[in-house]
Image (cartoon, rainbow, N blue to C red):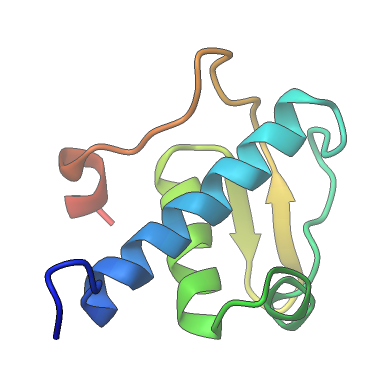
Length: 97
């Protein structure tokens, strides 16, 4: 493997972070508003071209940050707007998930 190749785990993390950033931007832009239901995991997978694992990781990160709430059997809903300077989840926050 070359030095430039990403390990599957690093690639997975990067894809999840990118997906979180995309959803956070949609929230900031008003495309997704408080109380709105997010698309299903399968729809997100198809629309974004990522695996279910990546989608679930991104949703978990957004839950940990208080941006969304998942109701079992119902769906995932927008709670709060991300900060305007950008959204990031640090290792301490991820460790609590």
